[in-house]
Length: 99
Image (cartoon, rainbow, N blue to C red; front, side, top):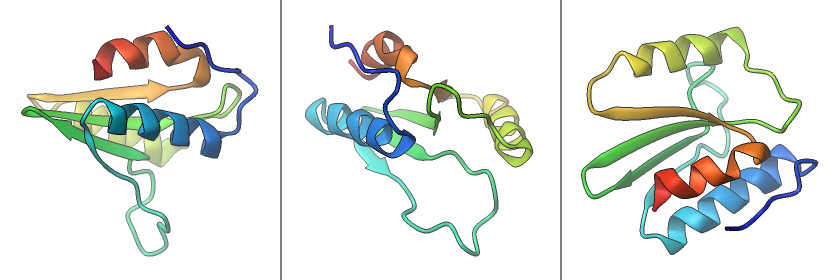
């Protein structure tokens, strides 16, 4: 099991999650620029084998905005999707979810 430096930036952390997802055969989507989009939409959408994962990516000290919390709550009400808030300290969970 890989460990991750919890001081990693949100951008680098997201890159590590995407790298693992790619290695494990997940398709992923991340909006590079969110201008004009609905605020708070999760950072990553991952799809593989009939599963859909929405993940809000935060640094260890990062905080969810109110729009992010609203999106996550709405998505959690949807049957058949998985919704997570991931931080560097979540790495063991991330590996379990993506394997």
